[in-house]
Length: 403
Image (tube, rainbow, N blue to C red; front, side):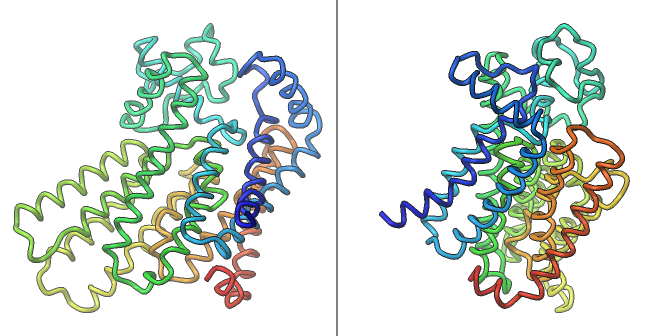
């Protein structure tokens, strides 16, 4: 009974965020006209659009409580209890509104352009269909689909399952995102059995630091970003590379190499970012195929998680990324369960924490301005550095808490 009470207390901040998310529903989007819901929606709109001070404070408090909740779960819950908590969070957040991003609307409308309008969303834009009701609540109607054709094909599934109706298609898309997350889970567990490093004893803690990370949970199950499919497939490509054994026949080795390259290409067809992992993958393939690998190369090859995480983090520091978005950190965080470097571990954790607060200026102001973007950068980078050094200074305490 006491354990069930702790589980309920731990899940409450996520339930709070689920309710809070509806303060940000676009006024042009009517999710339901059911009177009890509609009355509640009117009150939540008052907070989100007319009491922005309160809205910002609520969001900041919820992020803090979600983070504290996860630390408590990591410290006091058993492995089975963590799994039950994880499932509970998914079930809660899948019914939240995509409060902090409108990308999921573009996923659905791109599929709509293919099915209903027989138009290529990579060469046409939503503004070409001004009479479509869906364009009223979309925030990006002036650019073609920025994703790969692989994602466009995959996004047809929830639209077709939802019969082109908004609400069924919306929740079908959320379920598709859950599928990508489960693929990541399977790949991480598979890799854990194949990787021999000093992260083995810390694997379960690091695994849960990723899968229960509030940023990962919110950006995946609430905001519905497709990055989990990109990274799930990328991790799967590493699974096939690490399957290569010296005793294997040439045919089997070629098969594993072929599958790894094809799956990474499919990953890049969702989002192009994982193309940057090609050098690491090729290096690993070469080291797995060489009979007698020099010891220094063998040791270097064991750092493939660090190399992958850093390579995926570097584009976020360039102008090419246009603007750093918090969900981009999922790319590097995906390798957290296997990272041996304490500095890189803590860096990823620190920036994942500070990046959620990056939304505060937007929630307060209600729009993106040059001043607001400057505030976002300060919150992310300066805040992240402070959190990083705090973690390093309290390293022994942090290790004891998360042990």
